Image (cartoon, rainbow, N blue to C red; front, side):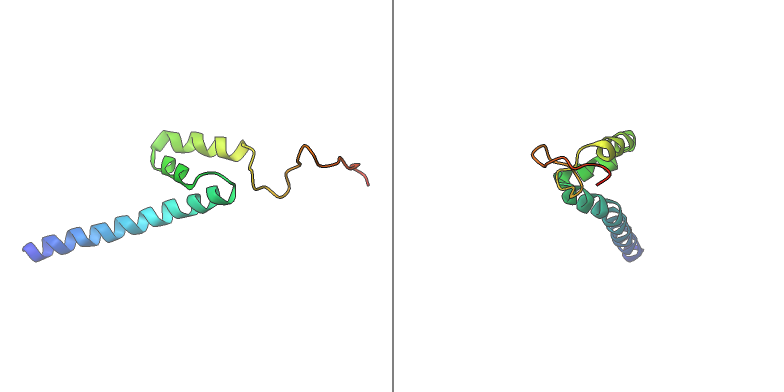
Length: 80
């Protein structure tokens, strides 16, 4: 019976590690690509804070956005 108990916990840890990997790795790489610190992905584990942070992240200025206009860039006419 002790062997079953040990395998039960090992299986649970493997499943938990897999879930954490699938839930935290994509936000980590998304944050890194946007120029933010990857450790912000830990906020996705907090139930209410994750939704608030998702809205903040969605509307914040991304430092690595290639389509963002810089202050020093010359303004071009909209119609050419």
